[in-house]
Amino acid sequence: MPEVDQQRVEALGPAERILQALLTHSDHMVHNRPGAVLQDNRTTIGAKWIPVTWKEENGQQVVYKLEQQKTWRGKTRVTKTRIGTLDTASNQITERGRVVGRYQKPGLFQEQATHLYRQIAEVYKMDNEFVARWASWAYPQEHRDLKVALAAFMLVQERKGDPVVEQGEVLFYDEDYRDIGEAMCLLRRKDGKDINPKLLLRVGELLRLPEVAEINRELGFGISARNAPMGRYPKAVMKYLRHRERNPRMLTGLVNSGFRRTIMKLAQQVGYKPESELFFKTLRWKQKQSVDGRRTIAMGMEVDAAEDWSALTEAEICQKIVAEKPNYKRVVGLLPKKIGLTRAIMAACIEAGSVSNSDLIILAPTLEELGLLNVQSVKDRFDLALAKAEDQRAANVAKRMKKQENVEALEQAADTALQKELETATRDLRVYVCVDKSGSMQHSITTAKRYLTQFLQGFPLERTHVCVFDGRARPITIRHPSAKGVDAAFRGYHAGGFTNYGTGPRLLAQNNPVQKDEDCIILFVGDQEQGPTFTRDIQAAGLNPVAFGMLHVGAKQCWSGRANDVVERTATELGIPCFSIDEGMFDDPYAVSRTLRRLIEATPVGQRPAGARQRKGLVEQILETELLKKPVWA
Image 1 (cartoon, rainbow, N blue to C red):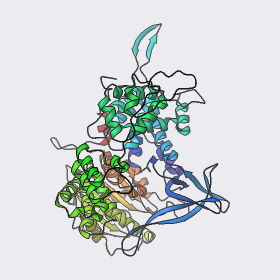
Image 2 (cartoon, rainbow, N blue to C red; image 1 turned 45 degrees about the vertical axis):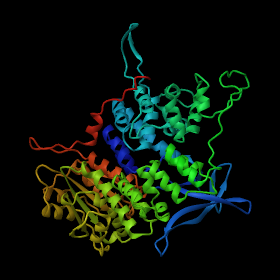
Image 3 (cartoon, rainbow, N blue to C red; image 1 turned 90 degrees about the horizontal axis):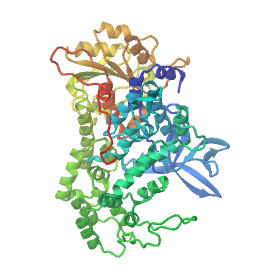
Image 4 (tube, helix red, strand yellow; image 1 turned 60 degrees about the vertical axis):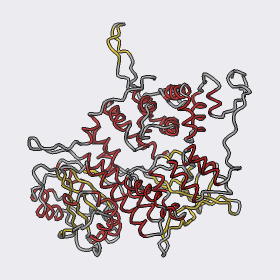
């Protein structure tokens, strides 16, 4: 991390550090396909993950980077670019004698996982209770990586209800924040946002990661140099498995949902001893005697064979799907290769409710290819899924569609999802967006416009005002709240002129003043290549913004080596936060809406007239969250 950024991070309080973790885009902590980790100083963690494949060539394993590119016909194809040869002993990828990266098997991306865990640890060192409330707040949220990291941390942190003794007498018992970690692992939610078996297994994998174990040792959570501190994790897994064994329908449901092998791994990791043979029978887990002969349950027991659809016809498979309503992933796993996923089978899955709303959006190209979007009942179900879209994945899926009407429907769903995400967060908030088009942006203006089309339509048009600026500012009119509307508004603008960041806010404040019951946030998009701050311009415009947002595109430093950070320095002089929007966010359809919502929620709330509606900031939401409690049975 650059020195100037490191100094800013070290100056943050616990609340601001939480926001830093929420708002700074982070790559996925887990990748379920092979990849390579390359050094990249532009990212927060100094590294990036890319998808790769390899093949044997002249006795060497040659690694290729996989990239999606559009053809001149508008279709998407995957291209392969050689990056080097793989040394299987060290997992290093080398090219012409130089190490270019590390081969990453499917699983935890250790640099990202360690970075996220370290951020939690830094907040904990300043405020233990804040992290406990942060974990309780995060539990019902959709950010799975954050939930896993917080659950892992709460299970091992040192506040575990120890007695406080004075002169041999117990005065009181300390807070037991490990209970919150247990609660996160054991509580169930009907909306599917709880920690499922796969995520529970990931909690243990994260704690066993050597870099994470070292952080825990630094904080005094464990003293063993050989074994990773696991805290209450084994106990939580034992409770999880015992409760499901005692409720056979729950265990059967997990098996039918495709978690059979995950449950087996959990049991092996903690040495779980079932109460009866039924546990092994439900999992179809044939037992073998251990070397020391200690096992007594299910020895020699025959288990049912795995379900097999290879002898079924297409019609029989459809009947089975409609009658049993299996999970879609389970259907795909059981389909015979000779039959495959046919039009009839896909229709049966939709009729049976085996396909979720998010699955329907992801499967849109398949539905189109099979002609099912021409079937009214399927089209109605698909339209309902689009109406309930929760992220911008639909925009990515649209790129693989052939019919223009389907492309537009998916793009509209992505726009609507973003607007719903920001509707509540932007209440009583006026947003100014200032886009730098000066000469220094000649290589970045196209990128800036592409990013703007991915998020700007999410803000309410009546309270969102946009301009481009160089030496002077010009207003931009967005005529329709969609990506196409944003794209049309910025068409024809090219880089040129010198830079004056103060001109944008002055123009917007003059044309669209902030009302007395509103807060104001200013979002900047540019390379910040300007010398002095523009604090006086903000003050002269009569603005009192509660925060800046900065989407930095282009070089981080100018030719002289000075950091390009005029927006951050101006925010410091004004005494307001400046939240960074990482470019990497736009590579992740899940991250765009979530990060923007958090950015808006994180802005402080200004003074309001008596009786006016009060926006609630993110920190206030976290502080007001009640601490999670374990279920009664635990």
